[in-house]
Image (cartoon, rainbow over all chains, first blue to last red; front, side, top):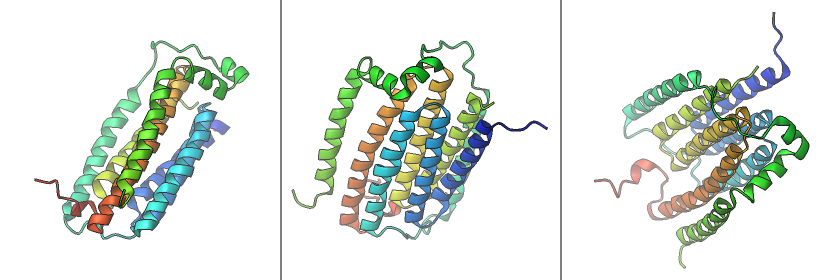
Amino acid sequence: MVMPTLTQILFYSTAGFAVLCALLVILHPNAIRSALFLVLTLFAVAVLYILLNAQFIAAVQVIVYAGAIMVLFLFVIMLLNAGETLEGLKHPMRKIFGFLFGIAVLGQLLAIAHVATIAGARQGGVTQEMVAKAGNTELLGMLLFSKYIYPFEAVSILLLMAIIGSVILAKRKL
Amino acid sequence: MIGLNDYLILAAILFAIGVTGVLTRRNAIVIFMSIELMLNSVNLTFVAFAHFMNSLDGQIFVFFIMTVAAAEVAVGLAIIISIFRNKKTVNVDDMNIMKW
C-alpha cells in the first residue's frame, strides 16, 4: 500500500472541506450562515494558496476576502435583516433547471480540467530557488512596481471611484 | 504528487457550485456571495497555473482580481441597500422593474 504524502493529505482534506463549505453556502436557507460558510471556504482556498507557494496571496486572501469583504457582507445582511427570505415560491421549476444547468457546467469544466496540460508551454523564469532566496512577497513587489506599474495605478483610481460610487448609491440624501 | 489537473478539477467544482447558487437562490446577497465563490475558483486556477509554470504573473493577476472584487462588493452592496430602501425586499423575483 502506498502511503499518501503530507502534501496529498493536506490537499485532499482541504479540497474536500472547501467543496463541502461551498455547497453549504448555496444550500443553507439562512443567509448569515451562508456567509459564515463562505468564510470557511475562503480560508480553505488560502491554505491551498500556501500549498502552491503563494504566501503573499494567501495572506491577502485572509485579510481582504475573509476579513474585509465578508465583514461587509455580514454587516449588510444584518442591516437589512435579510437573513431569512422566502425562496422559490414563484417558480418552483427554476430550482430544478438551475441544478441541471449547474451539473452541465460542471461536466464541461471537468472535461476540460481533466485533459488540460501545460506540456510544451513557455515556462516563466521564476524558479523555486529564487522564491526561496528572495521571498514570494519581495518578488511580487518588484514585479508590481516595474512591469505592472500602470495597472497598479489604474487599480488605485478604480478603488477611489468605488468608494465615491458606493457612498453616492447608499446615501439617502446627498 | 498533486498535479495541475487536481487543482483545475477543484476549481471547476467550486465554479459550478457558484453557478448553481446564482441560478437557484433568490436572495440577492446570497447570489452575490455565489459570484464571490466563482471569482475565488478562478483565482485558484490562476495561482495553480502560475505555480506549475514557474511564473509570478498569475499571482499579480490574482492580486488585481482581488482589488476589483473588493470594489465590486462595495458598489454591489450599495446597490442592494438602495434597492432595499425603495422596495423593502432583497428577493430578485421582486426586482422586475426593468423587465419587459
